[in-house]
Image 1 (spheres, rainbow, N blue to C red):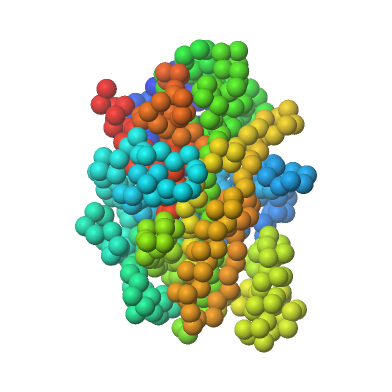
Image 2 (cartoon, rainbow, N blue to C red):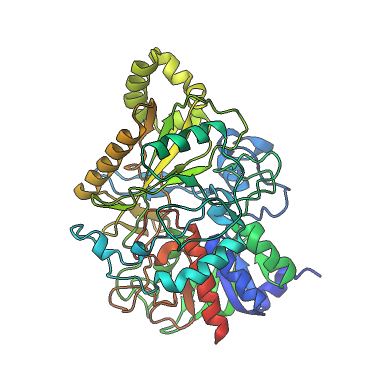
Length: 539
C-alpha cells in the first residue's frame, strides 16, 4: 500500500537523501538494500512512468506543449529549469539556464552513458601538475587501490559494456563487449590505430536494445539507458521499501552546533519539514554547496559546515571541445555513433591533458546557433566556407545538414581547483545559485595545447571545431565545491564524506572531488557512493 504524504512528513527516517542522480540513487539503493528506511527527496519531477514526461526530444522544441511555459517544458524533459547568475565577467553579471538534469535520475537521465574509471595518477594530483599553482592535494583521502572493488561493483551494477583501454594495462574492468562499430567509427578507429594511438570501444552503461541510438541530452524513450533511476532508484523503491518524494525543494537545512535537526522544504507551495537520523546531500556540485550556504544560522554564520570558508570554492567543470569530423563513411541516421575513445594524451611527457571520446548526436542546429552564435559566425562561417565552398547563408541555415555528415568527438581537458572559482549565492535575497569561474592564463595555454594536439591527430581530415571550453554556459562534469580531505582546515568533508563539525550530514556527489581528472566523473561518483554505503552499514 503506498505511503501517504502525511506519513512521509510525520515519519522519522533512517536516511534522507537529497537528489536521485548518480550519487544519491546509488547510495540510497545500497542503504535500502541493507535494511535502512530511506527517503529520497527530489526537487524535479518523477519520470519513472511516462505520464507527463517529455521523452525523445529536446524541451526547447516544445515550450508550448500542453500549454506549458519553457520552464515547465524543461521540467518535463528532466532539465534544470532555473537561471543561474554568472558573475565571472568584468562587465555586468549575466544569467543562463545550465544544461544539467533535475528529476529522477538527475543528470544521468541525460548523460551519454560513458562510465570509466579514473587513472591511478588522478588520485595523486599534485605531482602531475607541479607548476600549476592550484590547490591540488598530494593525494585524495581515498586511493585508487581502495576504490578498485567499488569500481568493479559499480560497473556490474550499471551493466557497463565496451572494450579494454590499451593505455590502462591490467587494472581495469572486465565487462561484455559493446555492439560492432558503425562504419564511420570503424574508419576513425583504424585511422587512429594506424597513427600509433590506442583507440578502444568506449564503455557505456547501455543495454543496446533494438533501435538504440545511445541518445543523450534528453530523456530517452527506450529502455536501453542504464541511468541511476532505472538501475538504482526503481529497485530501491519497489524491492527494498525506499520512498520517493518528488517535486519537493529543500530550502534550508536546520542544524544546531553539531547535528542536523530537519530539512525545511516546499512542496505544492506548502512548507514541509522532514526528519531523519542521517542526511545526505547528493544534489550535485552546484546545488549541494548552495544548500549549505543558504543554511547559515547563528552556529554557522558563513553557511552550514563552512567553518573553513571552503564551501562552494574550487569549482571545476572540465574544458570540453567538440570536433565534427567529416569521415569518408557518412553516418546513417539512427545508427550507433557514440562508440570509441582514446587516452594517449591523458598523461604524457608534455603534461596531463585528458581524454577523447565519441560525443553522440548534437542538439538541433537551431539550438546550437542560438547558443553559440558568436563562435559559429566567426569560426564556422569562415572555416567551413573555406573548406566546403559554402556561402555564408548556406553555412548558417545548412548547419544541421552539415553536422549530420560528421562524426562528433569530444575532448575533455582536466581543469584544476582554484579558490576563486566558486559557487555562491546571488545577491538578490532569494538564495539563487550563482557562480564565478575564470580560466587563468595557464589554463588557457593548456586548452590551446590540447587543441593543437587534436589538430595534429585529425590531419588530414576536414573538421569543424565547436569551441566550448571557455564558455561557462557549457557546464560539464561540475565537481569540487565541497572537497573531502583529512583536515577541517582545508576541506569540507572527511574521508567518509561527513561534513566537518556536523555529525549526521554527508555529501555524496562530485562536490567532494579535490581534483577533476580528465574523464567523466560518473563512475567514480558511483564507486564512492558504494564505498560510503559499505562503511556506514558495516557499523
